Length: 307
Length: 241
Image 1 (cartoon, rainbow over the protein chains, first blue to last red):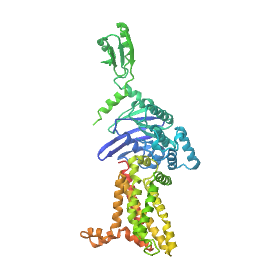
Image 2 (cartoon, rainbow over the protein chains, first blue to last red; image 1 turned 30 degrees about the vertical axis):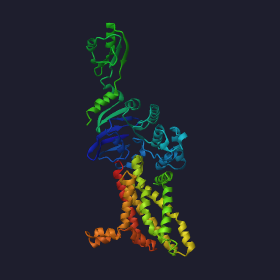
Image 3 (cartoon, rainbow over the protein chains, first blue to last red; image 1 turned 135 degrees about the vertical axis):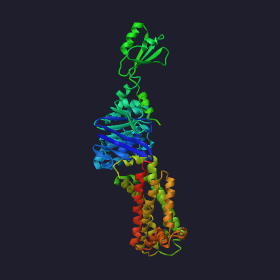
Image 4 (cartoon, chains in turn red, cyan; image 1 turned 60 degrees about the horizontal axis):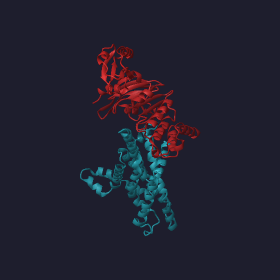
């Protein structure tokens, strides 16, 4: 479990993280969202002991990060932004170094390293120097390094940044595997990642908490949540659509004779629209209901906090 | 700390730093001793020419060995990995210091042909020679502690090198009249003595003559400890900058 209490970090006068408080329970995959400079990385760096908080504190499994830094570091596996590794080392050499530092010796150390090489399919490159590997492989080395000691808490700072779509997909699958019975903290600005990976999403802006919810609930805050787009063969009577109960507004679609009908918050407007189409005898050849766009919510939440 | 030390040595080995240092050290010390120091022409069975040139050689070579210790770590960002592992800053600093010191000592060990040569040609006082080597080891430790610190101050290895060399040069030169004249006009004689007594050469020279004074040993040990302490502070303060 992680618990932040008014955690604050200032860099030469500028506030990076501003009295941030939240809790994460075991089994939760928490997504930290926010524009660049929102304080995601700094928050993670404070938890891992790399950056000292200016004020406030956090507890990881009940241990204070300021007083029991070493203990906390033993509980955490961390992949930093940009995946910091000793890139001049070989994959195997690097993982044995990590095992050494984590206090494994002899046979157990060997077993841990081999298990990681197998789990992340690194056996074929185990003797290669890390900097010569592709980004996808490097990221897998980073993940292997982070979970070698089977940590209770996994902190991943933009784990799929800079990967191609296939690699992203693989890394995400691996994270989902790892997430069982751990506390996982992921920072990202890839919004689809939040819907596919996270059970809970926090939106940060200028170091402050702007929203704390499930990805689904966040989507429903979108003005496009439950919006219905109609594609017709002839021009539609917009007035009759606009006066339907539950309709918040109408936008012209990108295609000719298409129209997007927005729903009022919490309202479902599909039935009303369908009966109207039947009554008017419109030939509507396609109809789409939207879940709402996370990126639109993200933009509207973080717009106010921008400098 | 053992794990870190092992990694430092292995990484130095894989990036060829060790070999370049050893080759450069042996070549230059050889040239200085035989040509500059007139090793044969002096007709003395001792290693004084070698010991006399060594501090100057070290000004050039040890900053090169120490410059990458921390600056590289910060430049590549790997310091973020290192400092989020359950390792103390002191442990990391000591590991880097000892790794570079071990390499410097390996260089000194490889000068053994000099010892064999003087023993073959004459009858030197091997006790004095051993004492001289002790002085070299301590001097190397002193300079490497300085360079470890300057390397932690900057992300640029070149700047770390220049800064390290400058500080080492100061500690060699502060006993000389050039530096003392600089201070003479505005500090009292009492303080002038203090500046002069900070000179590495005074303490190094005594040891190479075979005189082991606790004062000299204490000088080197306190230099090393002080610089390591400053390095730990610097790393703690600047790691995330």
